[in-house]
Image 1 (tube, rainbow, N blue to C red):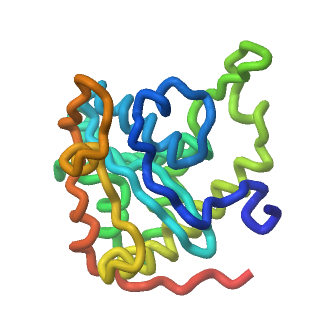
Image 2 (cartoon, helix red, strand yellow; image 1 turned 90 degrees about the vertical axis):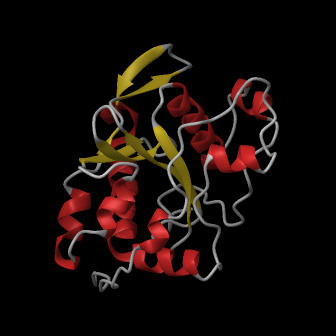
Length: 213
């Protein structure tokens, strides 16, 4: 727990639940559930998204969202579990933050990620019934999670891409893919706003040396 910043990782990442109505009406869940809920919300606002599964030394078993907002022309990384996000303005359509990162020069990746990483504006304290700023929640934990995320994205994306390409790790997926496979059971819900699942697999990203502490 301490080694992964106080957050119990999901080492055996399970697939999304097939009974969507149960998931959407529940307050419980892990990062996979949070990712799915966010994809549904993005779909309702016509923002294209995909679910990304990540498992590296810095980010040990996690789900989050890659998204593209066509109206704003911005590519996003959205992590509703850790309350982290990053975005960048892009000219190309239908890409997320990781597509944009993969096209950055090797020496610019750290600046590209660290300079854009920030927390969601507010968290809701259900017990107190109040919206509260991030620093009232747990600033120290936020810093640890943020640093691990930046390290993972900057130095471990090539590893993730390699594992996706050789089929050793589950590749990104979307609500559209799940619907086409008959894995969505929610009457009247037909997702249409999804990013291509294979665009990241086209990247040929050289590895960056991990920092020594």
